[in-house]
Image 1 (tube, rainbow, N blue to C red):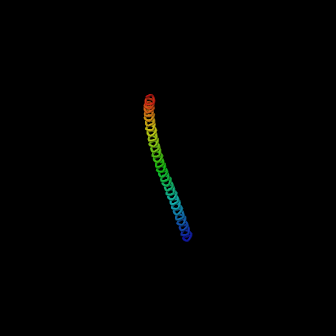
Image 2 (image 1 turned 90 degrees about the vertical axis):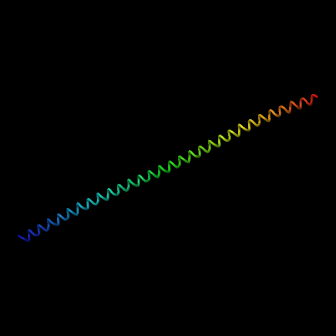
Image 3 (image 1 turned 120 degrees about the vertical axis):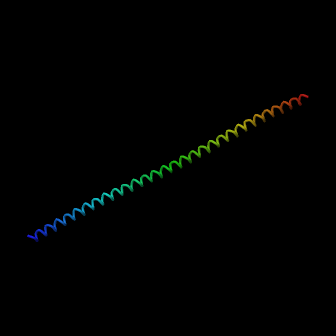
Length: 107
């Protein structure tokens, strides 16, 4: 009888160890799954931050180009205005010279 009791106790001890090992394995699996999920979330956050930074850089670059084009357009408009004024001045001068030539011809 004592051998049977000893064998039963041994069996119970082995079953308890197997259960403990199983619980530990499940705990480890859950921990690793959480760690992997955290890692994926951190990577996604990092990728989003990089994308945002890139987007902001591109937006700034576009704004800079727009400002540059607007400056160039303003300068061109100013040049056209100056040329128109110069043309007008030359036309007026020509009119004066033509009038003077007509006066001289009449003499």
